[in-house]
Length: 553
Image (cartoon, rainbow, N blue to C red):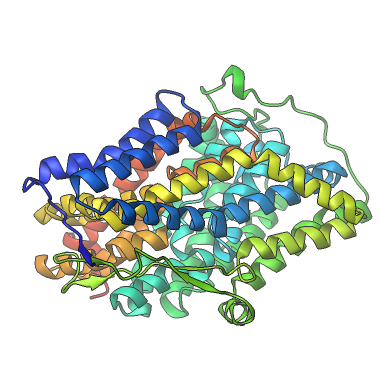
């Protein structure tokens, strides 16, 4: 029996919207204000989502349970699989001392913590976002920052803030490619439009990052380095997105930015070196930074050995991100499992779509093509190069699994919640509330993308969820569909820092377990403030000359 989604079950959008928001509010309040452990907060949010879906929206209970289960499977693979294996690699590197050598070598480029933050969180993180996405950049950069002595809150929160501007073109352009494929946008036109929105924020975010870390005065002390970092990322981001395509935008921009910053630091260093590793004004007893230690110089051979596992990781992640490789690996082994009782048994309804459209629910066990598998293989190769014995590798993997068990449980529950909201239609109710804003739609339509990523944890998922609605609303209001399709993705990137799975990844990478609420409270202001700035920028592109000249019709 097919169940049709209802977006205003009470005939009153205020009541329906308030009920649709209940699961997310329950989870965020439990996590951010009641200091409840993340996996328990996620379970409470999921329980609330089931109750709302079944009793308020009329979704069959069996369908609700299957949708949550489907999301849980997705949480394990690919998200949880990435987290487990990147922490596994980090554990291997820490145990044999090579991670300490890597940290010393990064500090050797500059011992100023602000510049280290630019190099690692922004540049290095953008490369991993472009190559893999799905939590990889936060896991890698937060782990490196905590190893360099940054406080847990600084390492977690700042990695999340840095991982914003690159997200729209993450995982070799997957969010944009999916937006175009699912909702009929012209790929190059919507890619170009995003490439005319995000470069401004690629320039702004490095300044914002250092301001959030050290304050305005300390930010201005290194403004030349920040400007070099931002410009050398923003310019390639614009050029590649407008004249080549979405696949290599982040990778090219990140490499150019990293090289530009390193070369610039050879001829310029700040007059005053910043050595504090804690957030200015946010030091807490549970999040104290490690004391600064003297930098040790190492031989070239030691440096090569220390960097080799991470170079191998970069190569494997890049290769695993290539569409041709994914297709080949899926051809070897990628069984599909249609979710009985859910697959093609739910219909999306107008005005979200032009006609009733069945929602598929097929779980693909793409274990070979999963990014986490590439990370696992790189970790094993790196371990062998680090002269680990096979039994030691296995023991370390088991210890790593035990270390992150609650984080994996949280990710499963979070994805169950996000998937259930999608299939029950409650997330669409929230989207429609934004869509009914008339002339203010460019601003609120951008925030629709933000809430989509905050709820689902994925810019790709948000584009699938709201990309069609953005197109329909834009045409009804006489706006460019490409403008609002791009705004959904550009606004969405700012929701990445508050989505629950990213916060869990950050807390796991920094071993700051049960402090997800602290991280959420810290990044929430930055997320909503940056999202509103994107909304204002899109509004100017819609109505204000000369910004209107940027719009791809």
